[in-house]
Image (cartoon, rainbow, N blue to C red; front, side, top):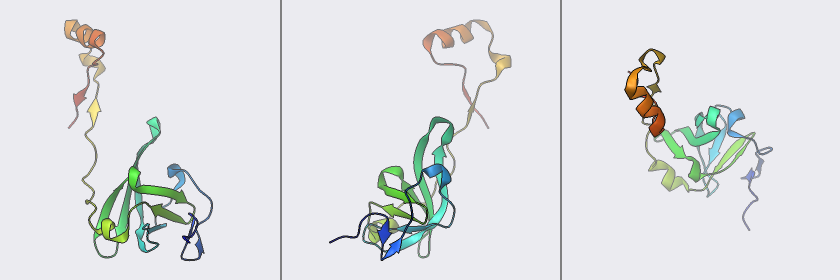
Length: 128
């Protein structure tokens, strides 16, 4: 019989928590119960309440990105994954930040602004 979620290898991982309060250094456990690393940081868009996943620090593979779909549960003292230890080694390295877009109020004039507004596109431009 498998251990209930939140209890891995006899260790109580604590209460379930939201991604916003997950701390760096919390142990990360694969679905087979093996500790595969620790939380490096959370990847999210908190202003839109979107959890994208985690970057974890592994001993053998360095930093790896775990998509939100591969995260089973978050606890005060542990993160449980839906994938086994073998699959963790095959995870991608973090690829950097998402592109940043900005809207310059000084450029929101003229007919093209109104066309974008009517089309629902906005005047967003890739920054940097």
